[in-house]
Amino acid sequence: MEIEILSASGSKPLGKIQVSPDSTIKDVKDKIHQSIKKSLYPDRQSIKLEARGKTLKDEDTLKALNIKDSSKLYVKDLGPQISWKNVFLAEYAGPLFIYLWVYQRPWILYGAQNSVSKEVVTVAAACWTLHYGKRLLETLFVHRFSHGTMPLSNLFKNCSYYWLFTLYVAYHINHPLYTAPCNTCYYVGLAGFIVCELGNLSIHLLLKNLRPPGTKLRRIPVPDGNPFSLLFNFVSCPNYTYEFGSWLFFTIMTKCAPAGLFAAAGFYQMAVWAIGKHRNYKKEFADYPKGRKAILPFIL
Image (cartoon, rainbow, N blue to C red; front, top):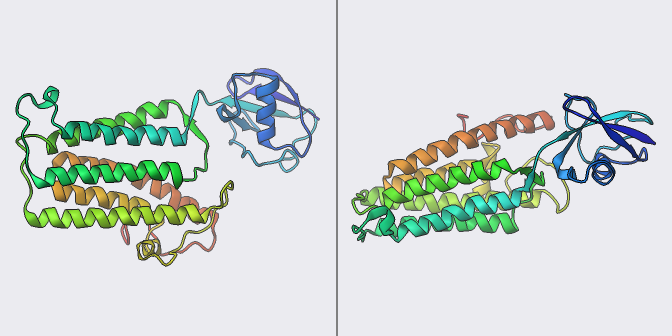
């Protein structure tokens, strides 16, 4: 059957494609790329039933959507895209290398005053390296992304956030005039940081095992026997809870105000994501646990 493709912005006719009733929206995207506009590769397209309508899922079939011969579909150009994996690798590699560079106290930042011999400074660098090294390995071997790509502009936005905050935090902790915290703060902060890092990794592994490879299957996440996963009894996104905990304890360990600002900014963004995911869970699953909060047990 023949489908007419129009631009979602202005409803300008772009061309026509030949498909079968059993074709999926992914097949439609491939046809548009092959027959209408080579630069409009599938990941760059958003297909809709109406110009201002909802984006259709790749796995939806034309038959299920009641699309017949001579029907119209609208395509929106999402702009240049980049894979989620590449964005994650870039935004996490930057903090790792920037912090270790500042840890060496380069003259361009500190001049001739470059002698710091505090144990907490070295441990903070190790913790930072551990965190972002873990993130890079998780991106390569653990995370399964539900979406293949994101707008290229996100690369610059995300990298700017992580890289500049890293420079801000690292500059203060490695400064020759940096004042170390009390021993209690140091040890409590270090212990809390390690626990939260292990918790965050445990949740990421659980979420990986929840979705079979190559699928978009969604199930209600529940504790899997790992004690760190028990936080699922209280919140929908314990990975964010542990992530915030890591930076909260890092702030306690270093007594560094910029680190606290980084923790607060991260918590705000993760809270927004967690609330959205929590709302989607409740909408998608009728039997979703009612006692869970989004990110903070009993609070938020």
